[in-house]
Length: 321
Image (cartoon, rainbow, N blue to C red):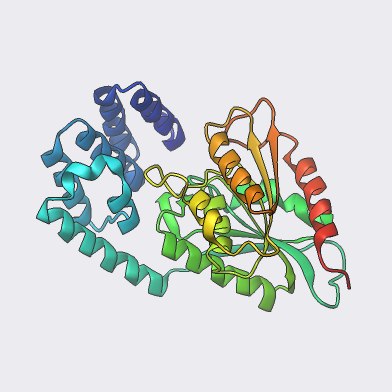
């Protein structure tokens, strides 16, 4: 039986071929096979039904999900282009209100999970240089730690933040932006106050959707970090929200900002990374984009070595003393 990622690949491939009926059949199969992944599989069905012009069935799916306690975030419902035909329906406004109430409650109760990996070196008097990393959509702490813990060998205190927003068992996302940023801010403070990170040398990192959370939080001033090191940036929080980071980068405070990005040569989001990089360069930001050959939207096999080399360069930009 395919796992969630394999079903996602099938659905997206058929969608890109504009074969929405076949994509819907796969989404329905996934919903039956993976009952714990309703957040994802039912969302595919809502989008595909709407895209096929079956608005009433799409609305029924949304209402059924809401009645069962499943609420997609307001920014998803309001921003997803395929749902444009549903937004004039008064029932859609009721769903939005229920979603807002649900996610506001989660803002009061939920916290992300922070794993911290200390370096082998003694803690400096002013605290460790540190990097706080957000995982990609559909991932979690384990795979992220496996790739980023190498930073500890460069003398960095490493924090890996796992979102409280669950797509399926052991699979997480950052879809609701306010909660994602709230959890990042909490983890940022914990890195400093509990684990000994030097606030002047605390860098943000991330992969894919996690880059959006980290970079967005810097550009919007949610955290005072001024350096980010990210892999496979999408510059978006979800499919219906294209390139918001590029727009932010045009107007935000870029004083002392430093950007270090990796992107695969075959990554479908390479153009987005290049747009963000170009915008930052245009504003005289020290921005560097390394294009990794022969990979798509993934980590390269030598990511640990590449990360170590970049962090050595980052270290050289930190204030002395």
